[in-house]
View: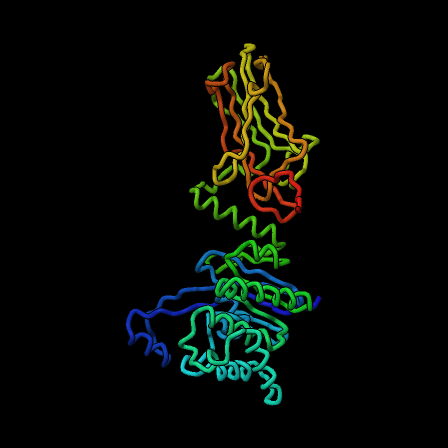
Length: 400
């Protein structure tokens, strides 16, 4: 496997000085007071040639810093970066443009910076202008008069017409009109199909899912997770939901929960498990996989009761809940000792996400709660397709 981009223990820090004199002392090798902000810390990463690789994370996670390091516009404070091939980068909007010069002059400037030979420059300028679809009178104006959409058109056209081996994109596709966004995406797909390497950073997780084969998740300057796209994007979405819902992080981490509960209720929970079709406790399943929730309850006096089970997403949204008394003509359970029940899902329709079980022992009317255990037995669902949401709904398309 050929490696296009390799980062080995890369860190990037910025020094802050309380007073200007401290900065001056540091410049000349003297002792000064300073504090450091680390945009990246000890990041190691490899991107294969021909791979479309995504970078995701919250604002301030270090995504743009990483892409600037790959593009060579900044240098690391420590660590090593290897890049194989010509790099074209779309970073800050209009980066590298001279605001006082015309669009034509800035195209030539970008071509010169990309190493376009003088003999090839007229062809390059013509192709950039044609792809940008900017009229000649607009290209004759200083770029400081351009709208953000015009900047986007010119920057993307100039960067992608140099036939790069590696294309670095930082949120560039969120600017511009729908027509040019579509045109830009088509060009990225063409690069991918030609075996070019693409580093794609975006908050649009649908585009990341659609374009990228692998993804890296940056969190506060550190590499939190890297791997197959669905796995990493789902983990990031789960993190965002838990953060927004204010969920605690310390939740039991086993699919089988032995509940040695102190309860004076006439019927109490003894154990709960999320299991596969054979009854083996599992922590991860796929969409449509058969599975079951297994519950043990205990009583010593033939107390009539009912059992309720709910699947809860990690933002505390109830996805599905049912109980034994919901069925017409259902009779109460009457355990004497330990009674085991299984709620069977022949084909679990949940899409990618993190979920929990909540279990309730109810009286014979289904109104009073004898015992309960909420947000236990965490399990992960991995989607098999590209559908989004919580559940898969059986459907078909009809064209008339």
